[in-house]
Image (cartoon, rainbow, N blue to C red):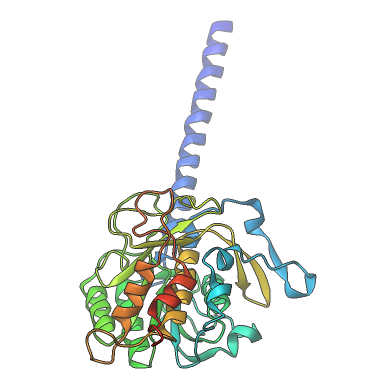
Length: 342
């Protein structure tokens, strides 16, 4: 009798375990479906920073400008932007298009720099409700204080974008006067995207794009395209930042670790990744555009000169797969100036 009771208890426990596993499996399936779900009719890919942890616990903290927290823009100093400002702080005629999640209108310092905006997403607003685009715009403005910004919202309020939408954003930005197009996004290859990149280059613009946060040499688009300047991220030791993409196709590197910049609602905080590295290089490109002249083609377009100035002035660093090395704003700007006649 005791044996039968023990068998019955054992069978009951097995049944309970089976049910529990089944419920857990359903729960996991539901969680997976929720995590991968997208807006109806809108398939999207996350912008870089949404999928990468920062290398510092402080990256999760946002500070109000009223807190008196000291601004730590170490990347701006590392690329020697302050020295470049002795020659140029940019020019209001140079427009940097930020193709991202929008730029926060509540931040007065950034809002007054925005000369045009457009919304290509399903969001009801061109404002930044995600926090990524504002952070990028803040770093660009910190590197090139006198340049102007263009808010081209191509990623939605959950940080997702489509190559075809980004392609439309590129064309719109070029047609509305952007000289520099900053793309801190990564996505799959697309014929529309590649054609837009070629269009931008043919019209005299330069595209700065992120090498991605996959931590491998695998291609990321649009950065992989020839007429994009592909950017890897570095840390304070001039080594690759956590999970930064790298490879033979990467052109340059820039600070991408624990970068302090603006966030929505008049806040400040930190982000790590190649997105922030792109922002630094976009600012450098704006500085160079302000002093460059057409010295080769005679067409009036100077994007070739800007690209070459950035590439030729980089500092070698102890990291593989970062192209010419760490960008240097001062050397890039001085390298574009014509020698003074004796």
